[in-house]
Image 1: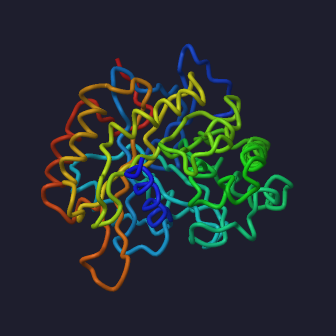
Image 2: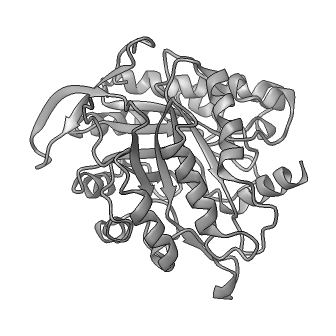
Length: 371
C-alpha cells in the first residue's frame, strides 16, 4: 500500500493535467457522424466498436514546453505521429476554462486535419493548481445553471463539427488532486453533487442537439482517499448519460520515483472498477505513460509490458482504445529534474513505439468497420 499511496500522491504533481441515443448493450453499436476530409464535407455512417482485440490509437500531443493543456498545434501532433510511426485515430486536449470558455475550434481543426477525432477534457476550473477547493466553477454553480450560457454556446459549436467528439467532465474525480473530488465538496455529499452537476452539463448539451458528443466517465485506477464515500460508482451519472468508462494508469511521474507499479497491475484494478460502474459500457485507457527519466524503472520495459498486455494478451476484452500522454514538464530550474513522457526525447522509446504500434490491432481511424 505504501507504493500505491506514493504513486497516487506523486500523481498530483502531474495532474494538470451521445450521440443522442440509447446504445444497446447487447449489440455494442454506436451511431455517430464520421469525419471526411476535407472538413467541409459531412458524411454519416455507422461506427463500430473495435473487435478481436483491436484498439483505437490515441495520444495527447501538446507543444514541448506547454504552460497549459490547450497548447496543441499541427506541428506538435506531427512530431508525435512521425516519431511513433503511426497515424492517430484520437487526439486528446484539455479545454481549460482558466484560459477561456470558448470552444477550442483551432485545436479541433488541427486534430481533424490529421483525420483523427478530438477527445476533450472539459476542465471547468479557475486555475491548474491541485489540492484546493474550486472558488468559481463550483459543482453547485454548475448544477444550478450559472454557466449554462457558456455550455450552450460550446454545444452549438460542437454540433457544427463534422466528426464525433469524445468529451468528459470531472477527470479522475475519485482522486483528491482535482477540486471536483468529494474531499473538497462535502465528502459524503460530494459524489451526489458531482453526479447531478455532470448530468446537468450533458442535459444542456443534449438540449442543444450536440448529438456528436460521446460522453466519457473518466476515473483513476485507484481511489484516493480510500474512503467508502469515494468509490467511483457514487459519482456515476448513469448509463443513460455515459457512453464510455475511461481509466488513468501512470507509471513513474518523477525522475526519483521508486516502486513504480506495472501497468497491468494498475489496469487490472482499474478495469474491475470500470466494470463495477457499468458492466455494459466499453472501457478506454484515457491516460497512460511513464517518466523516461526515472532512475529506478525502465520506461521502455514498463511501456512494452503495457503494450503486450493491451495488444497480445487481450487482457481486458472491453477496452477499445488508449491515449499515451506524450507530455513533459519541469519541477525546478534544473532540466535534469524534468519529467518527460515525450517519445521524441528517447531513441529506445521511439523504436519501441514504432515496433509495437505496427501491430494490426492498432486502429488509425475512428469508426472503421472491421471483420
